[in-house]
Length: 110
Image (cartoon, rainbow, N blue to C red; front, side):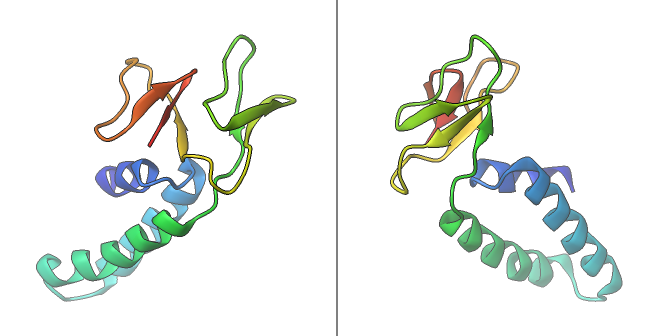
């Protein structure tokens, strides 16, 4: 399930939403008797399509952190400046952005 959550987060879903969806999907998969070869792509591809379309939600901002470009500070959150703002995720603790993402402020943007 961890790979499903990580993939959903990389694709732009907030962590809480990704975990909930992954738990729901995995519960459904355990009840099915199909081979993983058919079930995983059938479940994963629609989820990825949704992740591409999901709006950016405010990201928590700790004191001293900078919001990514295209985003602005609003209280203790970074909020997208427009619907065209690049997807953003907090920079991982190891300091490296995932493949396909780049550093911007204290975040990684796609």
